[in-house]
Image 1 (cartoon, rainbow, N blue to C red):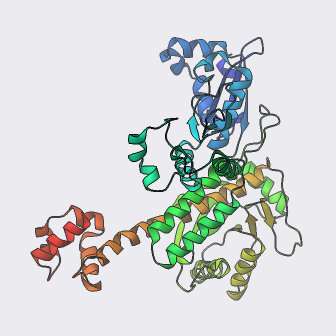
Image 2 (image 1 turned 45 degrees about the vertical axis):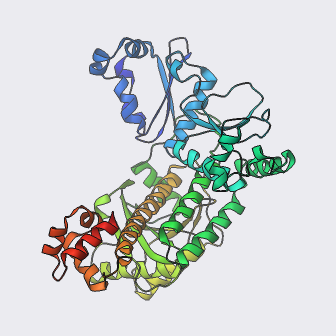
Image 3 (image 1 turned 135 degrees about the vertical axis):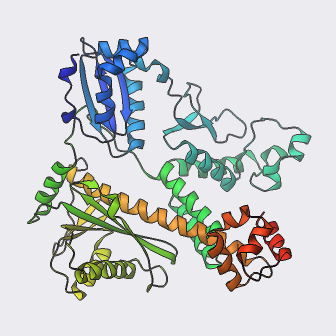
Length: 485
């Protein structure tokens, strides 16, 4: 293919999968990219061809046609790439033909006590396979949780001897029902396995509800690290089994790019009077009402403007009240904009449905804020809530306008979660000082003010502690460092 035939302007800078064909129309390579434009352009740069190895030079010289499909994120790109490689078996993807890059879960029913095992190669062996899954680390952690939750056999030894059973930590910790000892019948064990299979098939709601109850219990006792662990397990379950990746009916048809074009389409579908050059999005995050925070992200011409992101610690709301939190944060932000006579955004996106949107509108009305478009985006069905409209607006999942709104919503969610995690870790660290005898509130404040964090305190010497903190003796300094490990 002549380099001049590849026009980067036709390819969006979005995640996706690209397909290269030779002059006979045969698929010779399938690849994925976080940025399609940048990745595909690299193949048609003379400098790269000159320094490439023999295989890459051969691929570049064989390309006669190309196509691509954009997707929502890198995970979808991984799975679509895997599917196309299996379908076409391209010559230049030979290293990926066995799909060893992606983990699966395997249950071999030929075993006396079948269990969950990680696998990378799907064989015709009568076993049942689940996957592949792009979240390898999340899958492994989730598998460990399910094995313990349902008491399934975790060891690989089909017939462990007395010594192996005696030293089995899973049995000691009661994470395994120990079928090898005869305590559980094959029928009872199979019932446990069937319950686990229901989760693998996507029935995760009972587990999620149980984990939320444990989170509430731990948070109520201020065991934030334990509560966060339950939340992470729930997030892993949803990431691995709870969300179905959509089917790609036409995986090689290019779609419209985002950026200004998506903004213009958004203006049309929302019937906005002005081009929404400046879009801001809000989201909240808390751990069952504790350490509530909110985020504000800014998109300009359809792209993130990170310089104008903002973070808020919620001050007036107690407990888990998403509506009140949204009202407080919008009141604080827009009252400042109005007082300082700064430009207002062209569009405000609220993460949530009708309730969150109503709270936002009410806050703006109380401020006598000049009229501006405010909408809500509910995550489950991707419904757009618009003031004065009885039914939510539903756009095609491939719509650039919807993808832009999703990008704003997802970025505000990520930014809020990141801020909440930072505060939670800081709170956990600071609580370590509370457990040390002789460390009161005033002394803890002085230590943190002098060193900035528990990590810096831990790295200091006893002499440095006594030098920087007035009234701190050498014996107490040594006790502090010993307690912090």
